[in-house]
Length: 147
Image (cartoon, rainbow, N blue to C red):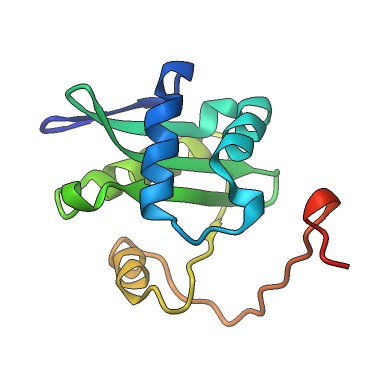
């Protein structure tokens, strides 16, 4: 997919360093289980075709990861470089992920946004997502387990 100067394509190993730099810039306070090196390694082994980058010239300016477990689809790590925002890149990344999930038979997509990230919540509302009355629960496993 293309939006002016931005092309959306599948992640390639050559994108690794640029993606790590982007994620550290966009998600500076991510929990340890989202550490870019490990997250990329895990995604490369589970549904690697659901990992896209946005490229503007030679620069990686955005990413999105998706997953589908046969029940629901999920969106992870939608990121656009702050200097490249408000140009349609996030919408194009989301459209790419949504189309791919729909092609897999996915009936519904979920995503998580930190409650204080009101600008991102408004972005998602603007493309058709709704805040749902749910309690989110999580439990770190393995080396991330806290007790």
